[in-house]
Image 1 (cartoon, helix red, strand yellow):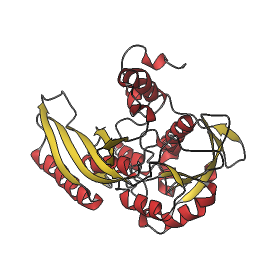
Image 2 (image 1 turned 90 degrees about the vertical axis):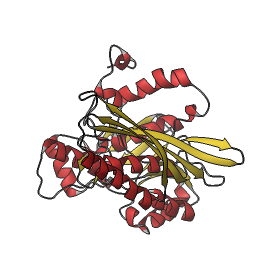
Image 3 (image 1 turned 135 degrees about the vertical axis):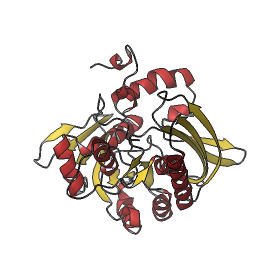
Image 4 (image 1 turned 90 degrees about the horizontal axis):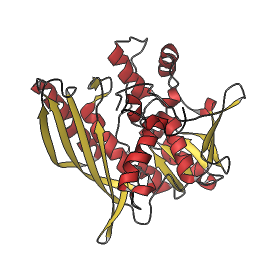
Length: 341
């Protein structure tokens, strides 16, 4: 498939999967129409100046199936996803809005369960849900419930991490195991039973980010590897910074149960969504400081360096396998796991 071919014809599930098709849709349809310097940064939040303050502003929609899964639900996911996009932009999350599209016939008891989950997760993250909207559509016009959350946070003075900040020599750090969220959702959807239940990692990351930034001044890039997983996130950073990222596959942590499930399902864990992990690019002279800071927080105790930034070939992610061979870790073209965030 060549560049641009994914825009011929009609929208497919691949256009929302976090891979090449989604990137082309965003680049050629949305960015092309809405082009401006703020949007051109291509980070997870817009960084805006309002009066004397600098704020981060972000929005996301959640359409997960099933809406309840081990470790969370669509409500918890909606709060975590938006809070984490603010936190990885160097902001203290403050306020959220929540808009609901609800299918006719949806059980009010389940809606209450979702809303209470959102309330408790917002409390956990230290944010307040201050406004919103509700729409009800006819039976069959939606799948149970869709949620859109928008967030505002206050940027730390003088500090804005970005996917465009990586430079040759920088270290690439991952805060913990990958693929837990996507596999937890897939296992519940398909009714799969494994030896031990796989739990989603959906969690607000603002406390972990605060600890990291308080103790380590050399952080350049922060990302939460959601749709498309670690592989797609690294490719996005490589493209934004015009660098090559080299990683060691044996250093990427995958929980044993999650790895076994991926092998059974024939899925590469590097492309599976996460909802509670950080990818950190930090200058090489601060990598030890960053890992120490991460290890001091309960959510970062599995943090490890997985690679480094190189100058060329730009826009590429290379990976060394456990067998010593090297391969290009590209973005996916199609849809591995639909409706997981």
